[in-house]
Each structure stands twice: as structure tokens, then as C-alpha cells.
Length: 87
Image (cartoon, rainbow, N blue to C red; front, side, top):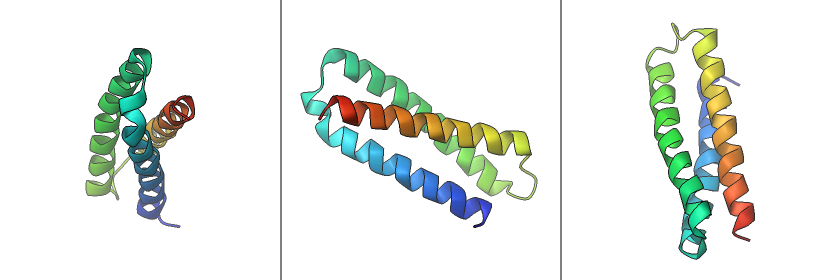
């Protein structure tokens, strides 16, 4: 699996969790909404980092790749956590 495929797969999973949580946000308590707002800011940073890595794929450092991977995993966990709270 290529680096781009791996990050696309991670991005799609994060997007899925994000979309599912977003649909249920109208039922959320205020503390969950605050958590959502923080995750949304991190989502924007994550997408920007991925765009940078894809643009500079050959030159992207291992550190940049690991940072993006960690950000993605943290976002995935955060959105999944919100989803679980809303069930």
C-alpha cells in the first residue's frame, strides 16, 4: 500500500467518524460540543498537514509523516469517542 493510499484510507475513516458524529451533534450536551469544536480545529490542521505531505510526497520527512499519522489516529479516536457518547 502506498503512502498516499494509507493516508487516504485513514482520512476516509476519520471523515466517516466525523460525519456520523456531526449528524448526532444536535443531541449533544454542551461539554461534548466543546470537545467537537476542539476536534474540528485539529481536523483542519490534519487536512492541511496531509495536503502538505501529498504535495511534497517525495520530500516529506519521516517525522512529518509520523506527525500526520499521529494526528489522524488522535482525531479518529476523538471522533469515535464523541460518537460513543452520543449513542
